[in-house]
Length: 233
Image 1 (spheres, rainbow, N blue to C red):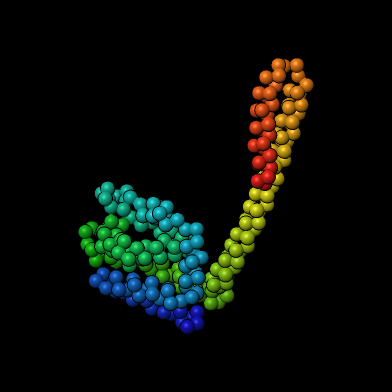
Image 2 (image 1 turned 135 degrees about the horizontal axis):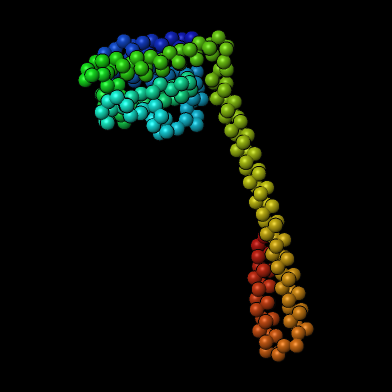
């Protein structure tokens, strides 16, 4: 399918969900997600939106406590930009489709309408699904008309830039490690030279022979340890 056909398939699935009754909602949501999965352009669009998106934090931002209803009720706050709307809407639909979230519970908590479940479902469709489908439609139409970058091209570009950054980070890490070894090696050699100077001073000192031998033994042991470190570099 070309991009126009992919968009039409998504719009058709979206309208089916919008016009459906609650009893068929699960099937219609699955069909909408399937329309996304079968479109390379839509998949790229959503991948771009999901990159760096924190769903856990977003739930605290967009599913909030209602100031007008009881403590166990909340409300849905519509994201102000398309990227957030697409990412949050997609994750929410995935949660519902996978049964991580029960649609009935979700509607009853965040789209409560005077105890009427049909009114609550209508509020869910109008408040979340319609804006979600509309935002995807607008973005895809802009892609088709060439007004914004093709999400597939954007995704490929992002992957190339990520690979370049990983390679650059790897090279820098290797340089840092080599520099660390060099500095460490210079420090060890400096310590060895200082020990040799100390040994020379002790040998020239007037201390008793037994004390000299003790001091020299300690210095030799330290020098041997330092020598072992140098060989390991």
